[in-house]
Image (cartoon, rainbow, N blue to C red; front, side, top):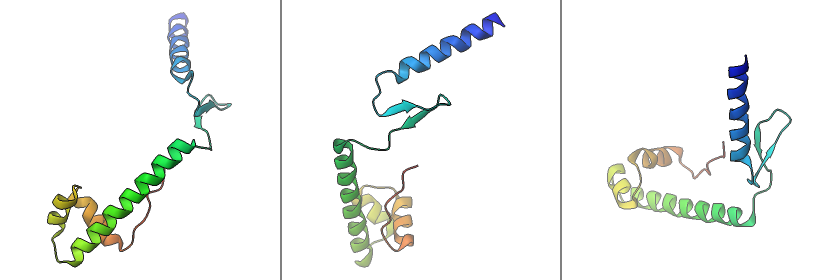
Amino acid sequence: MGRNWFFSFKEAQFSAYLLQGVSSLRMSWAWQAVRSPRLSRKVEQIQQNRREERLARYQQVIALHRRGMSQAAIARRVGMGASTVQAWLAAGEFVFPQAA
């Protein structure tokens, strides 16, 4: 028991060290890391910029598709995967991805 206890203790110390000083995380009663519900303004701004860029790429994909370009040609021109182009065209509308 002593050896297993020692390694468990060291793992717990290492986990605590990794979480030390991370302001966006807090510890729950079950010793699981939980994200804070509020994001910083900087993170929110970065996320908003990404949404706008993604929407612009989606609009570009739709415009190129309406001009008769193939999905593979659109993917090469826009610089994204062909499966992403296929999924966006199949969806029929732009959907913001949801956080996991």
